[in-house]
Length: 88
Image 1 (tube, rainbow, N blue to C red):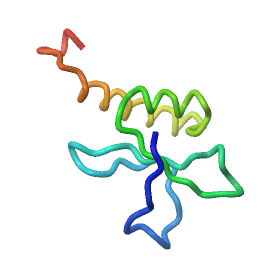
Image 2 (cartoon, one colour):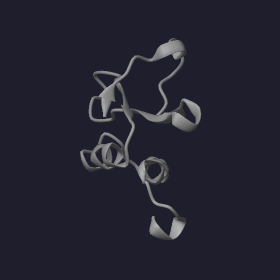
Image 3 (cartoon, rainbow, N blue to C red):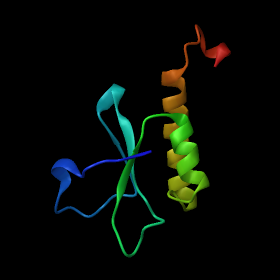
Image 4 (cartoon, one colour):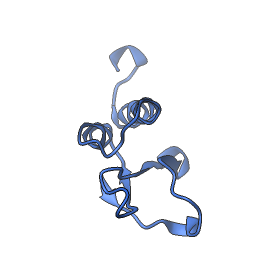
């Protein structure tokens, strides 16, 4: 996961998870290990980055973990070069 600027959402409350960028996008998430001292958003562009964020508790709580897992699956499928869904 990489540090990302908040972009055009300044002044809005931070979101735990946000998909940004359409089909070629990435998962942006609030690094919950930094709360409450700091609000830091990170970005994951691969299933491995999502898994690592969950594992180190940057993403926590059952609803956020479930959604992040679904986005991780999407990122993994996007990365796969499988010819069919059976190969995934």
